[in-house]
Amino acid sequence: MIYQVEGLSKSYGAYKVLDQVCLEVFPRSSVAIMGPSGSGKSTLLHCLGGVDRADQGSLLFEGNNLQQMGEEAIASLRRERIASIFQFFYLLPTLTVSENIAFPLMMQDHTAAERNERVQEMMQAVAMDHRAQAYPNQLSGGEQQRVAIARALIMRPSVVLADEPTGNLDRKNGESILELMQQLITRQSSTLILVTHSKEAAAVCRSLWFMEDGQLHS
Image 1 (cartoon, rainbow, N blue to C red):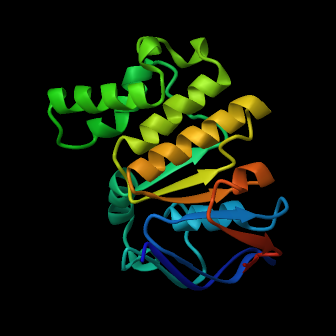
Image 2 (cartoon, one colour):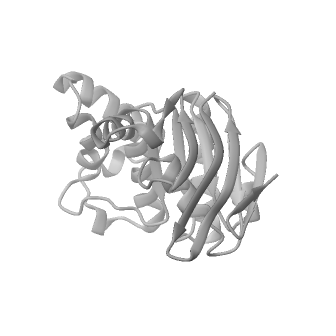
Image 3 (tube, helix red, strand yellow):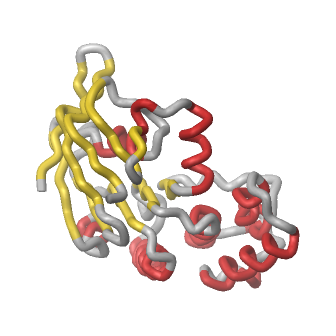
């Protein structure tokens, strides 16, 4: 089991964002979560990624209770096991394409040769090897998201959490990014949890859940 979530609740003041959410996610599965703005989708994703903590309930990731883990342990999981892809690309503007992709490896004990090999592999996988020395401001939106996907997947994570990954792209680029993301995640045997407003994006996943007023329904 990748995730086992039971009775997860979170409030901001009097506003309950998550209300007794229960969810099971299995290895190598793909799950889409749809719902209106403010329904709690992104908050749930933040809790699954260890970015935020729920007020109550149990959230197990690969058997580890994220609710009870310290910040250092969660940070380690986020570096090695849990990857995130966002609507906004969050590339480091002073680093080149190859340097942005390599950045997660800098935090680990890899030799320069190992880093270079994995970066070259990922740049080829996302068809960005010809732009290796370009900077983010020299790239289109679609190209920036390809780099962001490569950066997220270079650690070969157990799970990829994607929050509206095509939200800043036109339809053609969005379709291309979804296809690429699913291909790479499947090749790495990772699990995908996708939050989206788009029915087209949700269609790439094998199971679909809906959020409304902080509650999750199949």
